[in-house]
Length: 128
Image (cartoon, rainbow, N blue to C red; front, side, top):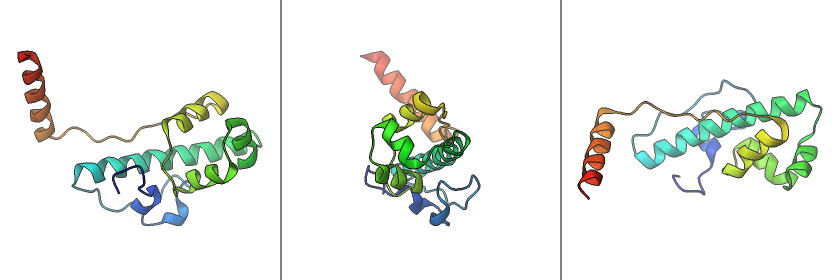
């Protein structure tokens, strides 16, 4: 799942609610780094989809209207909002520019082994 072909809604216990309401159930946080990053990206996209849906309702835009203004096909927008496809950086930037939706990136604090690895990498870089 950790590549661009992963399905964001697959990380939830309620995939049919992805992007519909803020609080939904999530599967356990993966241990594998690549899976964990995809999990956090899915949570970020879910949060984005909820905010974008709410903003479209506020300004009385349908998904088709938003898609037209954003230069995308309505079906792609619907799949993105449902978590069936992975959002791209351009989708987040477009939402900010077009309707003012801010992105909240989901991150976890660094673990001690990650901090040690970063210090080691920094030390190696300094020796070059």
